[in-house]
Each structure stands twice: as C-alpha cells, then as structure tokens.
Length: 436
Ligand SMILES: [Zn+2]
Ligand SMILES: [Zn+2]
Image (cartoon, rainbow, N blue to C red; front, side, top):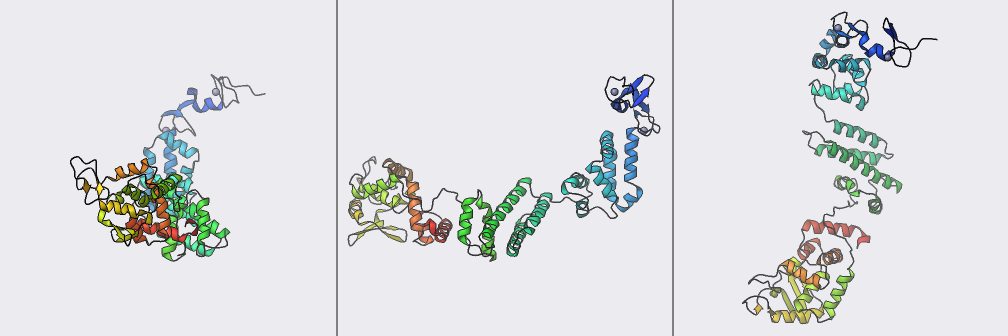
C-alpha cells in the first residue's frame, strides 16, 4: 500500500523530497521543484534538465533547420515570429500537439515552398486556417479570398450531388457567371458569403422541386415554379438564377418572381368601401360633379390623384353625347352616366374658396386655392378619403384589371408609373393566368 502525498493533495505520489511526498501537480508547478536550467541557469520547472525557454528554442531549432530554411527561405519570418512569441505560448504549442503545431511541422517538411494549395492538402480548411492566417500575416503566403474559396468548394460539392446533368451544367455555369461579375479586387465579406450560400440553397430547393415534377431546369414549367414560389420563404433568392436561365437560353419560358417594392396586389379586389363609393358616385347626386368624376377615375381607372388634379377642363369632351377624357395622347371613354357631370364641369367650375378670385376657373377641373394652379394632390386625396375612397387601393385594383388588357406603354401613361414598372407588371400578369 503506497503512502499518500504529504503536499495536501489527494492522488498518487509523483516525487519524494526530504521535505515530503508530492503529487503530480506539485511536481510540475510547486516552488519546491524549481531548479536552475542546465544550459542557461534560468530557474524554472525543468524537463530533461532544461528550462522552458531552452526547450522552446530547441523545438524551433529542430523544426526550422538550415535545410528547411534553404528550401523555404520565406519561413524565416515564421521562425522569427515564434522566437519572438511568448515562451509559454510556444511551449504549450509544441507540447500539446495542437493542430497549429502539427500544421507548422508539416509545412516545414514540404519539399517545395508552401502555397495555399499545398497547405490545403495538409488538413481540413478549419484545421489549417490558423496557420494560414499567420502565414498570410507574415507575408509567407499572399492573401486569398477565403470566403470565396470556401463557397466555391461548397458549390462544387452541391453541384456534383445533383442527379441530372442539365441541372449540374446550369448551376455550374450560373455560379461561374456570378463569380465573373463580382469585384475580385475585394475579398468577399462574411455577409456576402452567407448571401451566396443562401442563394445557392434556394436554387437547389427550386431544382429539387423541378426534379420532383419530372423535369430539369431547362424543361421546367412555369406552373412548377409558381407552386414552388409560394412554398418557400425566400423565393426571390432564386430570381437572379431564373433571370440568368432566361438570358442564357437555359429556359426562356420561366418568369422570375419579381420584387415588390411597393405593396401591389395584382388582381386585388375592389374593397367594400371603394365599391360602395363608386356606386354612390355613379347613382346618387350627393357629391359635386368633379368629385364624382374623381371617384370614377380613381376607382374604375386606377388613375392616381396627382394625375387627376392636373387635368385641364379642355381634356373633357362630349362627343355625340358620349363623355370622353384625354390623358396626354390617350383618349378614354367615360361611363355614359358621367355625361351630365362633364357638361356641368365644362359649363364652369365654381370656386368659392379663392380669396378675391374669379367665380370660375378657366383652366383646371380641380382648381387650387392659388390662382392659376390646380388643387394639391393631397387635398383631393383627403376629399376622396372623406367619402370612403382609398385612392391607393383603388389604384392597385384597377391597375390589375387594366394591365392584362392594355399595352404597358399605355398603362404607364395612364397610371403615372414608369414604363419599366408597367412592363414588369404586364409580364407578371400576362405570364400567369391565375393572376388575371
Ligand atoms: Zn500536491
Ligand atoms: Zn535554459
């Protein structure tokens, strides 16, 4: 039965001195075991008669030999860096057999100068990453776009796992095309890399959906895309890929989901309030003629109030008893019930609120408080809201029904939106029967 330590710790005895019996911990760290180094006389806990400084220096000398530094002169910088480093750090590095030290010794063992590619072959990306950044920091290796490279590796793996050749080809070409478009003088940030990974993930989800419908990306049907779009959280992440599919000829039949910067519901229904207001305007003689006209233009035609207030009286006409209104070069027919309003407006608009003004306005259908100026859009919108009209919703609902029937250029003029927006809506509405 071995006697217990007298140092006050439990465990087995590791060393016996005249002062008592000591455990393993005390033998390594206790002040009783400090000795002068056999080489440099530094007082330390010795291993093989040597202090930590001498052991660290020996480990470095054994690793960075003359032979190694002749083969890879640039490693002198790493050698110097470690010599200047904190001794405890170097000792723990070399004795704990860390990934870092294992990688460093593997690098010094290379027959040819270390490169990123050679470093890649020494271990996983994660295992060699610390040494890589140290080598880049010391100018042994040029800096490299690590996030981009990690993404390329991920993409290559995912693409190889796709079951169908056409899908592999399309995604590979798209990833390459994207890469050519990024600014290679600047490294990818962590956020950009995360975005790229998300985009790839969504594209792969689309391809799985397409495959499930017994197709590949180049034979995929819009119906498959449409049902996929509503089944995923971020379908817009596949937008760039789908646009690329169209321009590259991979699949020209697919219409990518669009961005909806302004909330705009294609095929939006008339709200109850707008429908009631329209019916009142058409059938009841409550509001002045120009307000009834504004209600019809807003709800039935989706024309925005800033366009309506700019209407001049000479834009209205009664031709053979049929009321018409002109927006720029566009001539619109108005409902027949509007004929008396048009007649009344053409007969002269009474302006009561203008201080010292003329009783009528020669120019505008919706005259403002100031002479020679039309009403402010906000004022008309307020008047419309006061009688239950929501101009914005009306615009959306009416635009939706117009869009499928009128060319984009006309819609753009009529609704006061850009031609690009109108074309996008038109494409979206025209491509999808359900939205009509
Ligand atoms: Zn002890
Ligand atoms: Zn020493």
